[in-house]
Figure 1: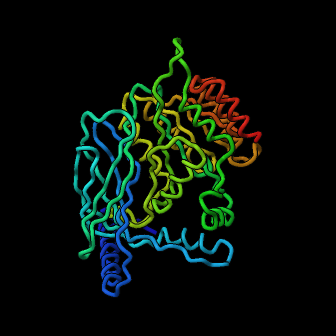
Figure 2 (figure 1 turned 90 degrees about the horizontal axis):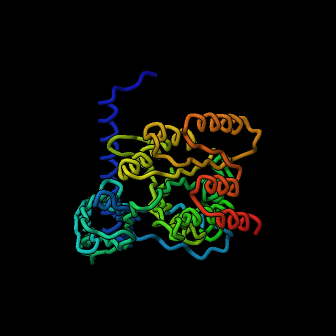
Figure 3 (figure 1 turned 90 degrees about the vertical axis):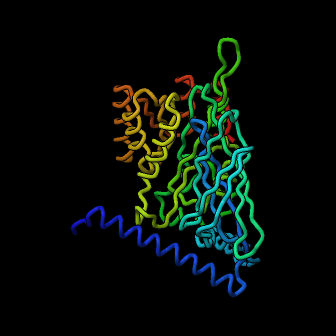
Length: 376
């Protein structure tokens, strides 16, 4: 089947995205008209500061519907997780973002998102509160959401970019129905962390002592996933509950946009990682992912695009050693190391910690703590 010319494809996607936005507005108007609108809910996703500019994303939507009190096992959990994707977006809402004394205003797009690039000169290193205020919808009171923005220390030895699915959170993307069941039927408290990875990440955050015994500033952590923004609150809670270092997340919106009818997960990850390399040109990175998707390919591409900027690309093996995919990847990683691209395929968090320790990315205590977590 011949491909449509790029301009025609672009025009088509813009029409579809515009139509979806208008349908969303019509749906909201009908709910307001019939008294079914539950009010406005504002989410401020964790953002980051680079070159004195805060990059923050805000979403405005209808207040979520609380689950019922069903006696059917897992029914309420499944309803809540499905509703995350069916939430009504608020299109065309004016949003003011406030970070300390700094202010900016944007308008939500066809999916309810407002994307900010707010200059924040002289903001100190660390986490800062961010507040988003939305004017009342149809004479309702204004709504407010709060979140956090991170300004990483450029004196840190490196920054960490981590995949989420099957790197820190067990999803079983290669398992089909089992993955769907985990996603839809479990509370966040029941979601399983990949054993040992939490201890490894805390060790990377702690770093190694210098000659005087002091440690350099902690590296910032960034999390990338092909998952929907609708799961953000669950993922944020998961990171906190399992004691992973907090950090901004790069998720994706599964609906059509002005440019694309559907999304490429690999391109989303590649763009997110590249964006961070470009945002912090003087920094080096530790990249962590798994062999279940395209993390090794993406990390290799970025290591070639930004020579010398990758301190380590650690890939957690999904599946058995003798699987053709893993055997080939093990050989390829060895060849890449011969080229100076430090890619390592590891069977578990213990091997990952050993590799990180050998590269002086974490201390010996980290190796012990990871093994203890695996033995627990």
